[in-house]
Amino acid sequence: MAHILLVIICDIYFWEIGKKAVGFNGARLGFLFLAVNRFYNEFITRCFSNSVETIFQTIVFYYFLKVKNRFDINVAVLTAGLTVSFMIRNTSPIGWPPLLLYKIIYDGSLVPFLIAGVFVFLPVVALFILIDSFNYGFDSFPVITAYNFVKANLAEGLSKYFGVEPVHFYLFAVLPLIFLALYPCLLAAFVMKARNWS
Image (cartoon, rainbow, N blue to C red):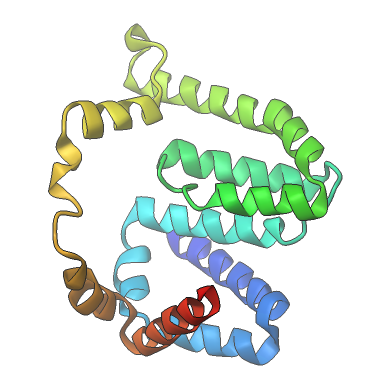
């Protein structure tokens, strides 16, 4: 039941982001696409790490839109959410560096981010290391999940089984399966973006 409540909270934040970014009608269209998105409805709501990552990223993006040039609750929630997401699944914040750089350049948010790094990021990381070490066994202290991920996937080579298919496999088999009705919109967005780059 708590899991379903978290998904509903994510949907509320998705709605608020949509209204702010593309207006009321755009948010309604976004919800329509979300409702018919097979990937979201089959996997995100059932795979715990995927759903937690999606929920935290959605909530974090809502607060990202509100960040300005001072340390406040928006910066604290943004930092805490990204940190929790990172500590659960360390590949989750991979798209955030350019977004944070954008805020630093255009909104002057460097000092608030530095403050949040000291007073939010470091304590949350320490808390997660303590929790992981407690549950894994203090004889292996410190247990750092991100280090274990890198060790297993890179040093031990377990990641060699992912991403080995050719590009056309993802374009014509995986993406249509995931996005269904949204797939033509995704292709149109790629074409429009490519025209803007040239």
